[in-house]
Length: 146
Length: 137
Image 1 (cartoon, chains in turn purple, orange):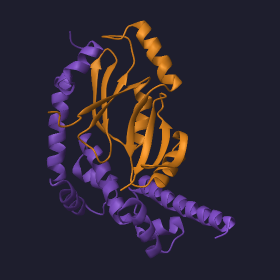
Image 2 (spheres, chains in turn yellow, brown):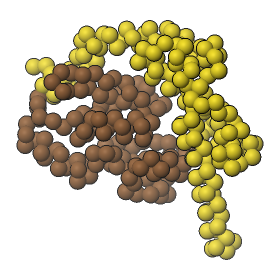
Image 3 (cartoon, chains in turn orange, brown):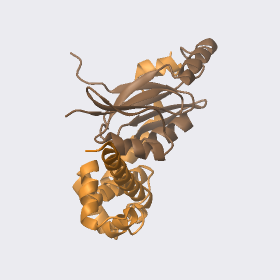
Image 4 (cartoon, chains in turn yellow, green):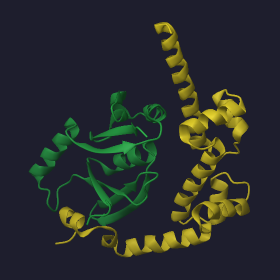
């Protein structure tokens, strides 16, 4: 193969990478909107099937699975803040609280309400006694305990 | 016998800025963010697929074992890029490199083939450097 052909091949590969990375960032930014595979593939300027194959080869999962995992990760953060399950389901782009609760339980092994309650208990315990979250050696280094 | 690493300490110069870097740019999760009084803060984050490893974003500030001179020395060394804090791994280095670059992360070594896989080096917001590797399977 000629050197220029190899260079062109590398440029094409880099260009494909850039478009797939941009589509991942598109999901990261728009997870709360009503987006689906068509929107995401359009954004990356790929046909749907070509897009799924490339995305999977880079991220090890389909764009849809990635979108769901981003929504659940964001939901966990909102639940820890004490936001209601209903509000969280709307904030992370689910159609209904029921589909949110079912997906959350499937992925996390517990309901959003149970996750929220446990997070609140932990948060209260740390607020009441912040040192309970810190190993002694670090607390001593900081001068928080003598 | 030692079984696991539970806490890793990274010295940072500003915890707000470190929070933004590790959470919003690298995509780490906050494990604990607790005020410790008098402006002090216990802040730990975890890598996305390693929720049991707490990375302590430890502020270099006067107090406890850190006197004024130690703080000045540490600050100078961190800013200078003396400390290589850890090796992170990813499944696809080229994709991760492009994503982090888009988010403004500074690289001091672009993805390069090494005998153990591919590696790049990046800096955090304080000046600590890290290896980012895609290891041979």
